Amino acid sequence: VKYEDLERYRTMAELHQRGLVHIEGKEYEIEDGDVVYFLFKG
Image (cartoon, rainbow, N blue to C red; front, side, top):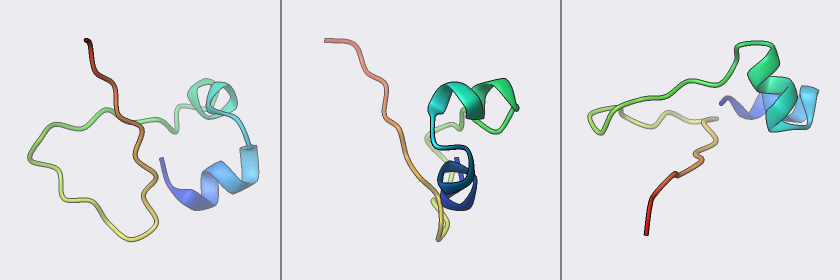
């Protein structure tokens, strides 16, 4: 998720609905403006 998109649409649900949420692999290099949401199982 880009920070600009999160600031504009405010909720993860809205970002999902608009197709702005991306799942990246462990090789992805985080860029300036990226918002990172970590998922893990315990």
